[in-house]
Image 1 (cartoon, rainbow, N blue to C red):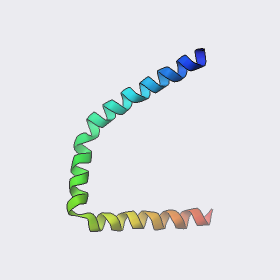
Image 2: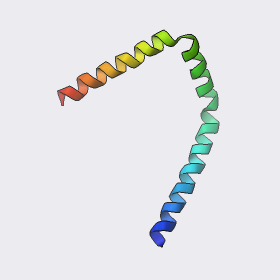
Image 3: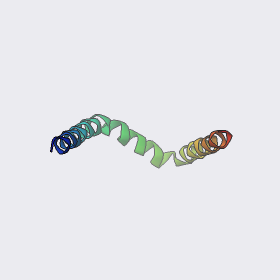
Image 4: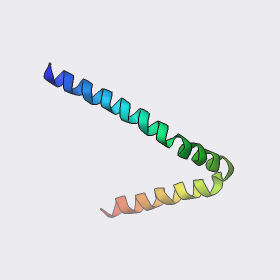
Length: 61
């Protein structure tokens, strides 16, 4: 019962933190989506670059 209560408190806390973060980050994400919509080519290039770097680093280890 105590474990269930602990998980419930963690769940409610996570929802509260997510709501606060989404409120704080909504302006940032709006500007980010606006940038991606009008400058999607360099954004896709950056995503591809990150994927290539990740593959290189993961194959080394």
